[in-house]
Image (cartoon, rainbow, N blue to C red; front, top):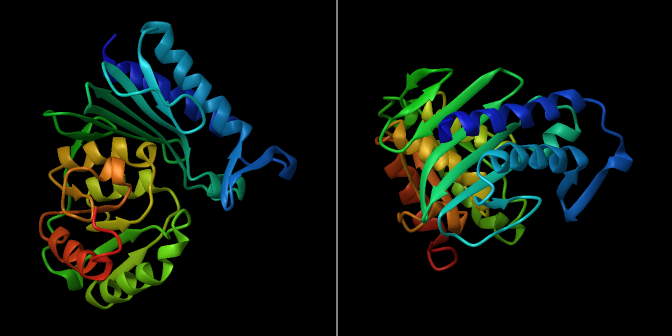
Length: 264
């Protein structure tokens, strides 16, 4: 079995857990990891399914997962978000996903994102392009900001930067045709990769939020960076992405607004 097929099997196993329990959660089954950051037994069960599927094939592989082990980089390491969009999920908003990436010796080489509600499976392999349900995808060709639709996410993990975020929002809002906030960043990345969104930016994400989507966008012909314009958005958690035309004006605004406050 290829790593790609293994990742697909793991994502689909997690997706079944999500859909079996969707709309059935009780408030007593929801816990706070931190203020405004929730976890449920569904997150934990889905993550355990992903690890079980992968470990049954490769017991020596490592994991960097939202709810569990965070092993050091080196060799084969899987970066896992078993339920991206937990707040949507607990409110029965049908916008959430499973996100799995494979890192080999620090290099992300595979990304799989499953939207179980829409039965959309996004796959990226380094050097081999990005796919949606087996068909190649590419970022949009929209060239003018006035025609561009952006995705974003509110900085719920970085509320100390809310004023700066609002400044960036205000400046981009008047340049672009529209801005959307879905509440599941993995799907934001998918939407950039397949051309539904023309660009995206967010502050304070975690590695498991970004890893699979990072590769998906790059392999779909898009651009993705940290706020410095560098190649570390997975680890800084501060992300700008878009097609080659729309990425530069987003990055320019972000760098001007956050200069001296967030420079990575």
